[in-house]
Length: 198
Image 1 (cartoon, rainbow, N blue to C red):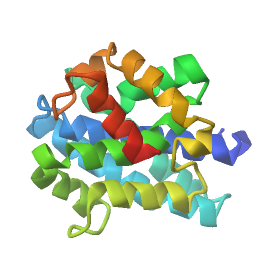
Image 2: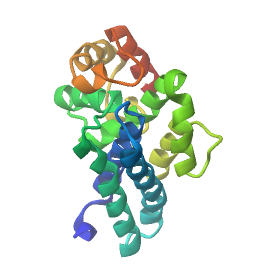
Image 3: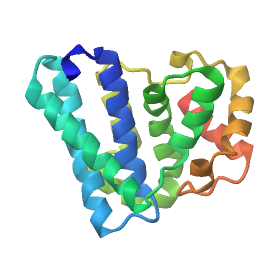
């Protein structure tokens, strides 16, 4: 069924699944049952998405990505919520029409970088799942996004610098922003993340 889906849409929603795996793993409510699913989902997606670009007709790669997506989303059924990448993405989509998957492409690397002061040690498991345990997870996700020709910055999805304050204020009202692993208290905090994604 995925063979008729435009590749840009498959890749964008594939990064949304990466976002589920990453933010699910980083959530304070993650546990031994959910962590394994998040990390395995991330590992499969990180391997399958570039292969899908190289071999667009490979059903094996598409199936691996599908399994990765299922594993990445499964922890949410156990009450493991998402974080600021999702919450800021809601503001980008609702107000500026940025496609759902593209919000993850541009926000997840920035959120990982911003969160690193409080969960950098935990993020090392994400880096290991992506095959480079000694590199920052945010950097690896951004490389994955770029490697499958998806947008990597807010500029790439049509956001102007003068929009950033409005996005920050709107995003602050979303629950995933409020429960982000690194506490977000003000619109200025959100603006810091947006600057990283600029």
